[in-house]
Length: 309
Image 1 (cartoon, rainbow, N blue to C red):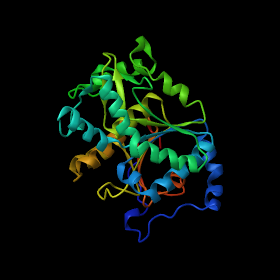
Image 2: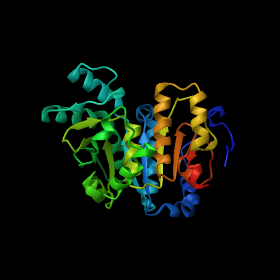
Image 3: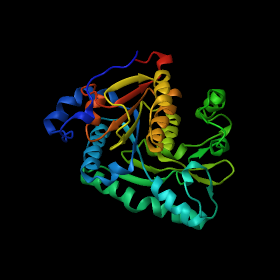
Image 4: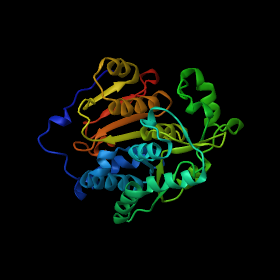
């Protein structure tokens, strides 16, 4: 399937209003299809900084959770990682390269950076909706990725590495671990996971948050990987693309580094087994309406080689 054009959400005169109770009730029959499914949501910094948008998003996440879906939140902590690593390692543009936190004291400081402002803010809003959540770092959850992931010349999701990846997803040879997170999502708690992880060599690494979310979604065989943002004007909206076609568009498009990070992490997730990636501008999109097919104002990516649509 090629592109489907609905309307350009960014051209609307008004932002998308928060759904009323009657709106949510009308969507409940459609949301039943999400029961038991795993959804990973990456929230960018500008949404986190916007109290109104963040509250709207988290309210809809709680509704999805109440319908029986498993939701994992990966908040954008990249700016905190950069600040931390510039101070500790005297290294700028940290997320363009991988390095590791090599002392327990540095690990403890890094966890404080993540928890402060971002995780506490999300947790408090979820609590106002009577939802339980826990903020936890990926490495404390014992999320272990293979050493290859920190090699800038190697793509974990490279098609040549598919055999290795499948082995990891089946836990063959204990190549990776995500056991603690798998246990946590069986509860009523919504995990808010910082984008850090371990490798088999025991080092702790920090990763760009949207890519980390894509990794987690793929490991858990999620139904959807969702990235929510705002004020990224060049990201297409109101359309549906197969991955192969959209890759060509990205190569010819004029995207900033941040826009490319959002887009490429979504592409990586879809290319490696996620049923669909939604990239949504939260100013104009309702997460619930998008999931129920009642709105078409975000960017939806699917694997056209699998004929999923």
